[in-house]
Length: 333
Image (cartoon, rainbow, N blue to C red):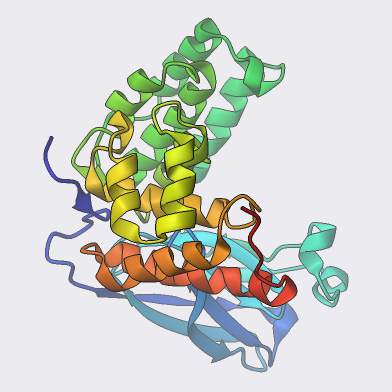
């Protein structure tokens, strides 16, 4: 199998292009508005990438450079809205919110979010518009063909949903296209519900290829669902050897070699990402040595050949710190 290539490859040279987000938010005059991005979609480490002060008339302007379609948030105080931006685009928004909710300490607790309206009504190719149209159709198809619990979805119901979606939206593997990949891997997550026991079919169709789409939420959701707690649940990984590898040896290479015996972890890029994410999942498990888990993650962060994994490992290590502070590190053999 060809080596997996990194990222979405929105442009082959990785060249960044400016994005402008401007508009009006009358309800929040003189407040700060922040553009929040995510360093990775595994830890969801957020970063404030641009700020502006909304003027007395409600106007604001934010700029930021990106190389691919990117999930972002606009944040005013503790209220936020989530959407996608594309390189080279200018967005003109009107932002509104119920003033009573806006003044709450945590508006989202009460269902309060920033309401964004695009002022450019001629923009028909906006990725947000296209994704929203797909998601509405997707939800309607599920409600129509499978009104019961989604986990009870039958193969026939899934086929009906797939046929309904394919009549309006592209359903093909297209890793260089963010929008098509979003649809493809959203459907993959639904198919996984139907074919949970047929992991080989799911792996061959959706993961055994040359791309790992780190920055596509639908892909990462499917990836994380497929490999959820994988190291400790896979029948192809000897659990005693796994525990010994982490608790006794406590270094990366033996663990990397051990789990590589699993046919769904043969690819080194996938294997390393699964190790990073699963070590975070088992960190709170008293059967595993926390100090050794931390050491392995730090080793990955400093020695990995994959730049995306260096960022993810560092962010996951940072996410464990609150746990470390609240709980004295202990080990029960």
